[in-house]
Amino acid sequence: MGVLPGQLVDDNSRRLAEYTAHLNYRKLDKDTTHHAKRFLLDTFGCALGRVGAADCRMLHKVVADQGGRKEATIIGTGKRTRPPTVPHAQSTPVANRRGM
Figure 1 (cartoon, rainbow, N blue to C red):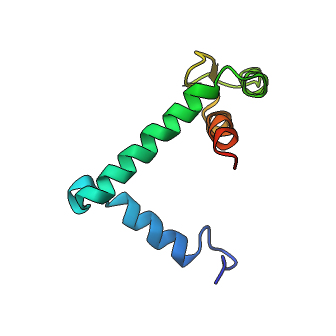
Figure 2: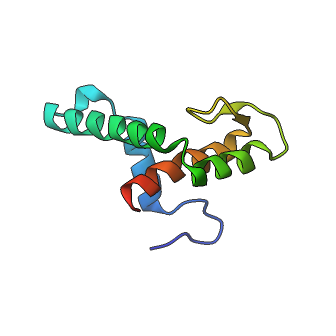
């Protein structure tokens, strides 16, 4: 079922958010923890590996040049921008590297 009128999120999204909010490493087995850490490190590696690529530099410039309070840093660039724009700037090198 989707989001009903007056709801911000559907029940599945709410359950997933609550599960995630209460999750910690002690509740995970070693294999799951190993894969989660590996995936996280791989993601950072992809982001840093492509931070200097032409398409990423262009996106970082566009994001950094937007108005607003410069309260967040785009990893690997030192450029400061508005916090809501950082996830897009950070995810593009990762998605491009992984062929997403």
